Structure formats: C-alpha cells, structure tokens
Length: 118
Length: 113
Image 1 (cartoon, chains in turn blue, red):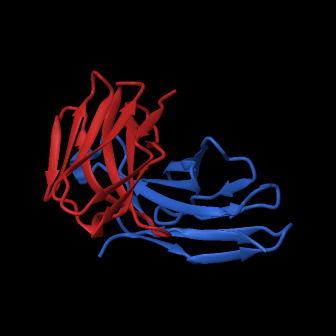
Image 2: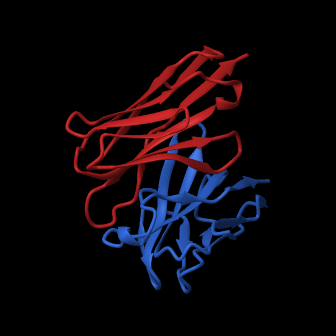
C-alpha cells in the first residue's frame, strides 16, 4: 500500500546535538513538506520541496535543514541552533498544481515523530 | 497572508448529537480546502477535500461545505459517537505557485457516552 513512513516514532536528543528525522513516501508525489506541531499552536511549516534537489524555507526554518536527493525521501535535520526543538514533527506529500489529473489532490501525512530534549 | 481560524477551540457534546465545526479563511483565492482528523499523538488523517469549484463533499456521517466568497467552511457530523472524539483541523491550499497548506489551530471534540 502507498503511504508515508516517518521514523523513528520517538526521538531523544541531548543539548547541542544534531538529529535527523526520516520521511519516505511511495506515492510518487513530487512535493514533500515538514510541519512542526506544538500544543495550542497548530501546524507550522518548516521546509518544503516541490522537486528533487530543490527546497524552500517555510515560516520557521531557522535551526533546521533538509535535503531532497531522491523523490521518495525528504529528511529533516534539527540542528543545535534550534533553541526549542521539543515538538511533534509531521511530514506530508502531495502532487503539485497542474498534475491533479494524475490522482488525489490532497495532502497525505505520516504518523509523526515526537522529539524530546533530555 | 492567508490565515485560517477555527471556532470553537473545544467542544463537548453528548453522544447522538449532530454538530457543526467552523472554519474561516481570510483570502478567497484558494485551490482547495481539506479537513483532517488527528487523534492524540498521531498523524493527520484526511476526511474530506473540497476543490475551489465545489460546494460540498460527503463521506458517511460527515459533510463539508465551502463558501469561497465568504471565506467559510463547515464540517457537519451527524449522530456523533464517542469514537468521533479527536481534534479536527481545517487547512486551505492557496491558489497558484504550489503554495503549501495553511492550517487552523483545530477544534478538539469530545463526544460523551
């Protein structure tokens, strides 16, 4: 079955360490996204990518980095520069505008990674 | 900049009641609107998607409407059940340029048996 896989489900990081969250999709979607969710704040966009080897900053990109070397994969690195990284991180994918005839127009989300600073 | 607001922030109803969740957005230039459900500690599950040219979509006991000109959408849940308890999120996809989804903060629903 097609879908998005995020790993790990839970992640613990010490102060000053970088950590990478994995996101893989087999939906053949061109676009992929990373959102951060904090209690009472809703989802905020960190980075997104519409094509391999290209990505754009979202609203809260500071302290994060991404890569898009393969269509299926969009890993997120939380660097030591991110001052308050404890949160729930969600990855999503979609087809891009103009290719709606190829299938479902909406976003598909992974099950999330909960990152905690210890 | 597009902003999405959901009212109420939390709602508690007895089992069997019909209920309406509200979503409003500031810019009517949207590509589509999507309603999601989120259970505690889980990812988002898509419930309904309405393209900008559509007025409503239905799936089982759920019905979502869209009034693009007034910047409003509603999610109607018929005959609510305890299993409907979750947070419901509304998101709009702005028109053009593959702009990412903009989310509301959600409505936390509790259905009491």
